[in-house]
Image 1: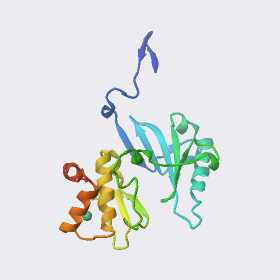
Image 2: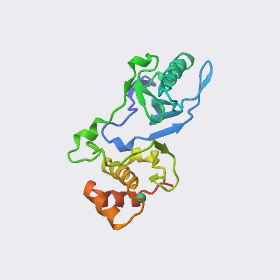
Image 3: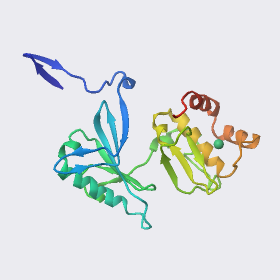
Image 4: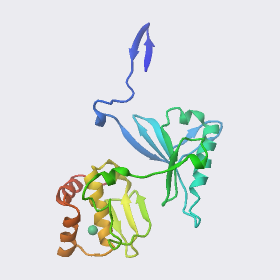
Length: 216
Ligand SMILES: [Zn+2]
């Protein structure tokens, strides 16, 4: 954008598209914005302090349709705090199982299902073509875990640390495959590691990255 300072036009770069990692990326919980009323989207993703993506997360109900309440909330925010959406790219309404994205103010029919198509683009990735007997997974939770990247409970509930969004793709794949494999083999014995290496060729590089980047 261009600003006129003391009679001179100055170009201000809000985002560095050349050196992407020189930008500041943050994800906040309960982002408070005061408009005609105070609103608090559940999660907001910001680049250099500019809010770009907002999430409304709802408890999962039996009909699996409660994400629509998220869509309605996002629409309400638009009327109460229009400036929150001035820099918005899109918004996400989710419920722990379904995630839909769209433009705040649009109807729920215009919110599309979120899919990570990049998984299918990686040849040989077992996440792209899971065999039916690979594992049975109960709900997957994304949490702010302390000192853990992921975990799998005896009830096959998998939890992933939200900080994984900053990890390279092969590391994210590794953590998911590691926890999915725990649904079949709970202990870290030689069978577990051998199986994991066979489905995740970059396992040792991923483990090294995780060791150097422990969550605090
Ligand atoms: Zn493990």
